[in-house]
Amino acid sequence: MKPESLLRRLRHTLPLASVSGLAALTILSVLSIAACADSEDTTPPEEDGSAIIPSDDAGPSLDGSDSDGEVAVVPCAVGNICRVTSPIASAAVAAINGRSKNDVWATGSRGAVLHWNGSDWSALESSVNETFTSMFLTPDAMWATAGTLVLRRGLAADTVRTARIKEVVEGTSNYRAIAGVAVMPSGDVFLGLAPGATSFAYYKAKYLGKVDPDSASVTYQPDALNPLSNQPETELGVRAVHLVPGKALWLVGDRAAVARYAVSSSNDAGAPSLERGVMVPVASQVSLRAAWGYDEHLWAVGENGTVAHFDGASWDLADTGTTSTLHAVFGIAPNDIWAVGEGGTALHFDGAQWSSVATGHDGTLRAVWGGASDDVWFGGDAGLFHWGALP
Image (cartoon, rainbow, N blue to C red; front, side, top):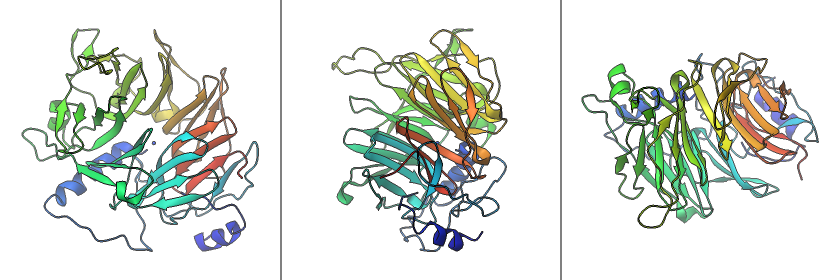
C-alpha cells in the first residue's frame, strides 16, 4: 500500500506523532560529521525529504512505511498495538522517554523532536537536521544526542541549546559519536562515546566522559576495571547508556561488554557522583544495543534476540524465541517489561517468560517507553505505535 493511501485510511484515527541500528548509525554519523566539520549548514530540511537510519543489514528506509509498504491498521484499544499518525510525516522515531503519561518525548530523523501532552503530539523546534538517537529527561529539560551533537531544551522554543563535542581520537581523524547521555541530579552530564571508525580508534579511545554543555569540553573518566584481571578495560565499544538513579550508571556495547559505575553517596560538594567503573562479565559475545534496570537489576538486549538479566550477582540469558536484533528495552515493573527490534519484533515479559506480541509492522522498532501497563509507546521506521487505548 502506498503511504498516501495509508494516510487516507488513518485520517479517522486519533492524531499522534512519530533506542537502534546504532552501530551502523554511529559510523555513518561520524563520517558525515568529519566530512562537514569545516562548514555550518543551517539550511532547513526540505518538506518532502526523508532520512535513513540504517540497520546492520541496510534494512527498510525510514519513510513512514514498512519494507513492503504495508502497515496494519488496527484500533487503539486495550490489548492492541496500533500505529498512529505523526505531525512530521517523514520522520522515523529512534528514542522515546517520558516523565508521566501526559509528558512524553520522542526524537528521531531530520532533527525530529515531538511532545505528547496526554491528548496530542506536537512537533518542536530542534534547530538541527540530524538524527537524534538517544534521549534523557531531567525534571526541567530534555537532552538528546545526534552524532557529536548534544541538544537540551524545555517546552519553549527559546530554551533550545546545542553543543558540538568535537573529540578526536589521538593519532587519527575519527570524530567520536555519542552513544548515549545521562544527567545526574547534581547536573553533571555524562556521555557514553561510541568507538571510532578504525581499529586504532577503537582500542585507543576512552568511552565515558563528563561534558560541560556550555564549553563542550569533555573530562574522561578512568577506564572501568576488569575484575578478572584487576586491569583497566580499554576496549569497550559503547552502544547505550542507562542511569538507575541513586544506584549506578551502566554502559553496554560490543561483544557483550557491560560496565557498571556505582553512584556514590556524595562528593566533596555534597552531590552524588560516580565511582570508578567495574566490568560485569557476561557469558556471551553478542553486541548489546540497549539496557534498562532498577535497583541492582539490569536487562540488556541486542543481537540474535539476546535478553540478558543481571540480578545484582549473576547473569541469566533468556529464551526469547526470536533471533531478531533487539534495539530497545523498558520496564514498567519487574513483571512488565518490553523489548523491541527488527522485523517489527515486540516482546513482553510477565515476570516468568518472554512472549511475542503482534505489531502489524515488519520494519525496525527502535524505541519503547511506558507510563503504565496499558499505556506503552513504541517508535521505529514507520513512526509511532501504541499499546492500549488512547484518549
